[in-house]
Image (cartoon, rainbow, N blue to C red; front, side, top):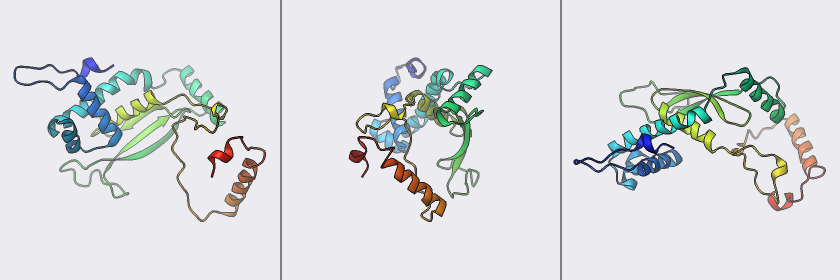
Length: 219
């Protein structure tokens, strides 16, 4: 998919780093967030070379995936399809996307001062993204300092994301592969209304809504 665009050729002065090594290095960085220096030890590549390889391969991956997996809807039919998905999956009519922003934590570039400093007391760039009903990015706007890396991550997310399954697909308590993260714990001082809703759900899921494998999974 990206081999031709990231392949370099050996010369009399040096032996090139293969396309496979370049891709492995980049995917390792995206998956683990290792520092360039740590990656240079693992792959036996100079840190300065690692610094140039990762943005280059990220850009190649994004260019290869964007037209298929990051295409912004451009016709009324494509927008209507998104709206239909939101209504059928989430019972939310006339919705063309869910939009939100996120601070992507970065190491402050040299001589940047407080330019990237935010209210969370970290250095970051601001990512704004629009997703469809299946959690796939349809539009992304990000700061230019790490644009290639972030856009590559978004494109790979869409590329790797499985089709959304339903509860009927679960067998024997097997997890449904939706790619969702666990819901973080909220505040401990819940209101009377929240306790009432919790009790109603609790009663339902141990009576009418109970499933055969529930006792083996829920502890």
